Image 1 (cartoon, rainbow, N blue to C red):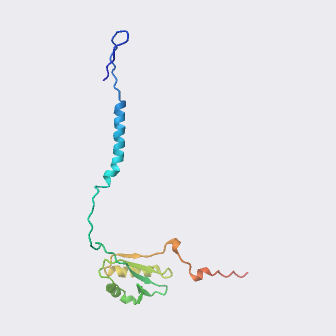
Image 2 (cartoon, one colour):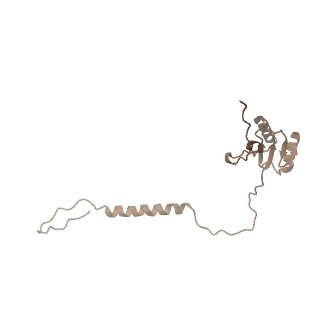
Length: 155
């Protein structure tokens, strides 16, 4: 609370009843800026100089097993052709555990049901990480048949 000073004519002035809040606002703005700058620094955690160890990574990822079905309906595990009834047996030889990733690649000329049938067969054998592989829209390579122009229709 502020008090009035005596008047120049020697009389006493009435006391002022309002408070000067300018220093309070200045302090609050400085605190706001300090907290805005310090908040991201507190979220990153405490800087710690970690020791180095000579160990393997804990989660060693092996490449997935590729099961392919070509346009003729033949089955392939990685690059080797297998009979449909031997597919699960060959997968068991290639995968050390049922948690190994398996990518199913089906030719676009075969029926969708055939791909789903193969995925169901692999899943029913206990393999849980089965995925379909497709080609990205921009990564398609033109086939030789697509590069030859089509003949013009006869008039």
